[in-house]
Amino acid sequence: MPTLKELLKDKLSEKELSLVSNSYDTVGSIAIFSELKKELKKKEKIIAETLIQNNSHILTIAKKTGKYSGKYRLPKINIIAGIKTKEAVHKENNCVFKLNIEKCYFSSRSASERLRLSKLVKNNESVLVMFSGIGVFPIVIAKNSKPKEMYGIEINPACHKYAEENKKLNKVNITFLKGDVKKIIPKLQKEKNKFDRIIMPLPKSAEDFLETALKVSKKGTIIHFYDFSQEKDFPEQSINKIKSKIKNFKVLNSVLCGRYSPYTHRVCIDFQII
Image 1 (tube, one colour):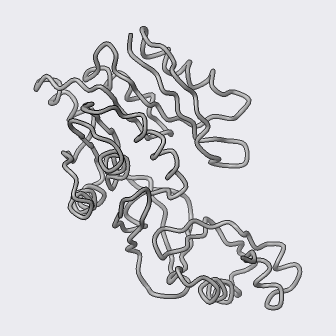
Image 2: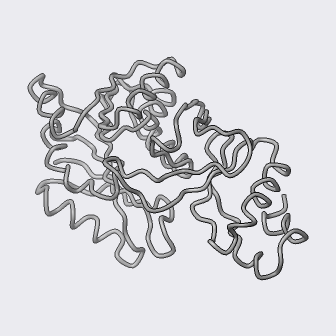
C-alpha cells in the first residue's frame, strides 16, 4: 500500500510533502495524528480526506492538539474529517474494546506486549493490574490465558466505565475497582489478597507505586514494571529504580516494548519477589 506522502504527491507542493508524517495511530476506525505541522494547517482537510479515500477501514481522522494535561494527563483531540466521533471500537488479541479517545489513554501499539504478558500467566494465577484503564491488560489476559482471578484498579472514572462495559462485551470475569491504587490496595491487603502476578503499566511514574504493590505481594510474586528509558541506559536505569524501593527480588527478563520518542523506549522489567 502506498504511503501517505505518496498518496499526496499530486496534491501538495514538495515543501509541504516534506512536512507530512507517514506515522499515525489507528484506534478502531479512527486515525490519530500526534501532530500536524502548523505550516500544513490549510491542507489538513486534503490530507485527512485523502487518507479516508484510500483506507476503507478508516472513517474518522483526528489530531492531538497541545500537550498532555489535566488530572488524567490526556490530550485534546480535534476531528479533522470524516464521521465526527471520538468513540471507537477497537479489536486486538481476540478482544474488543470500546473507548473515547479523548477521555481515555490507549495505545494500539502495545498490543504485542499485552499478548506477551498474557502468555506468561499460568493457570489459576491471581493477577492484579494497577492503572488498568479501559481494561485492556486484564481482558487480554482473561481471554488468552486461564487466571483464577483478575483485578483491575483505575482512577479515571471514564476509563472505569468503559472497563465495565468492555468486560461485558468480552464475556470475562474480572473485578474492576475505581479509585486511587494507594487507597484501594490497603483495603485489598486487609482482605488478605496476595497476588501471584502484578502488572504496573504506568511508565511515567510506576516507581512511586512499587512499595504499594509490595503490600499485596508474597514470596514468588512476579511484577511487571514499566518505565521509560533510553536504550543506552537499559536495563540498568530501570532496575536501579526497583532497587531503590525493593530489597529482595530477582530480574527474570528485560524487554524493550516500543519507541516512545526518537531516543526513548517504553520498557518492561519482569522481576520476582524472593
